[in-house]
Length: 319
Ligand SMILES: Nc1ncnc2c1ncn2[C@@H]1O[C@H](COP(=O)(O)O)[C@@H](O)[C@H]1OP(=O)(O)O
Ligand SMILES: [Mg+2]
Ligand SMILES: [Mg+2]
Ligand SMILES: [Mg+2]
Image (cartoon, rainbow, N blue to C red; front, side, top):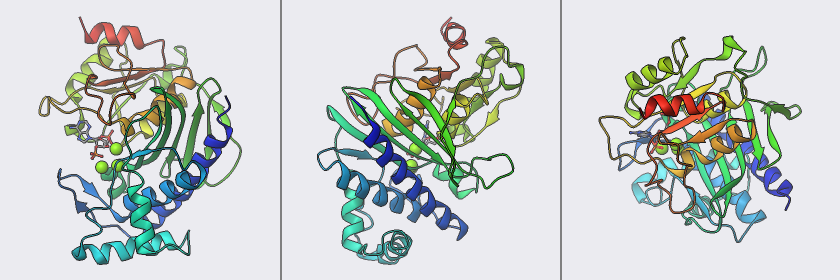
């Protein structure tokens, strides 16, 4: 079956959401603290609204498993935030209303199903707030297999031009990238082992999201001598997929041994890297499980590589 329509709708929606995020970011957004203490902004909500609206119109039967929901926003004390968010959404969708945007956001409260989308409206909210990297991440999953993935990375440098890169992949069709400012999709490939300059590894900026000392030790043991490059969000998957780094390590934080990864933090990035010729597993070599729930309860850590390095990294991790 062809996923041309899914790919086009997902790309258009992610591009629109990325535009909204950049508008919010120019105005120096404020963070709101969620119940789990992590930050969220009007851009996270606006991005989820725009993408869920587009998916709801194009694929009304498909559930969406999104990170955010509108319960907090509907509280009377959040009226000012809701109104601010509505203003940004209206610049792209003039007939949006407060009731409609909250309903669009709550379309993202779907469940993992035989066919569903998963959405992180802003992955790397901390990077977004720091004016660093972040991503809008959207993926279609069927029978537990990611079929389409789109990563919009509005802050990704694009040699000399306005920043912003879009990465996209369809299962069996390869991966490609395109400047968000416009242009053609160009096929991408992971780095080859001969390309010494790009045999780097990437990890999170946030020390608490991983185990940086172990990540560095493992990368060294696997033959990567250069210092890590620290980047927020699934932009790291885009960097590996486009051959700018050979490895992305995300090992469980010793401070949060019970943390489990969310599907929306990995699905889109994973297919982009796989279709660019790379490999994605957990730290034990198990495939990431997108079939059973929004948390990957039976996976620990994530290893993303150019493929060639993968077995060596797993071997040093598990010896
Ligand atoms: N202890 C943790 N370990 C791993 N990832 C985490 C942890 N806490 C939060 N995250 C997630 O890391 C992602 C950011 O990735 P990165 O660190 O690579 O920039 C966010 O989606 C964030 O989830 P959340 O969206 O709930 O804040
Ligand atoms: Mg995230
Ligand atoms: Mg997020
Ligand atoms: Mg978050």
